[in-house]
Image (cartoon, rainbow, N blue to C red; front, top):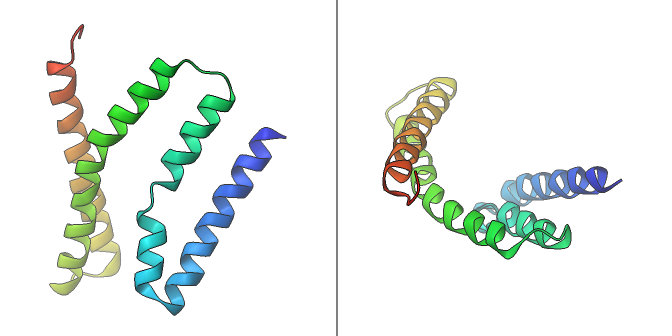
Length: 115
C-alpha cells in the first residue's frame, strides 16, 4: 500500500506540473524547480525510521548532484535555439548531464574520506 501511495503522489505532481505549465510557464517552472522529490524522499526516510546519518548523507549528496543537473537546463534550450531537433537536443542534453554526473561522482569519490 505504501508503494501505491508513493507512486500516486509522484504521478499527481508530474501531472500538476505539466498542466500548470500549459497555462503559466513561470508557475510550472517554480513547481518543477522545487525539490519535491528530495523532500518526499527525506520525509519517507524519516517516517521509515532510518537513521539521521542516512538522511544527512542523502542531503549532502543531493546538494552536489544538483550542480550537474543544471547543465541540462542550460544545454537543452541552447541546442533548441540552434535549431537542433527536439529529440537531438534532448538526447545530447541528457548525455552532457550524465557525463557531468559521472565526472562529479568520480571527483566526490576521490575526495570523500574513507574512499
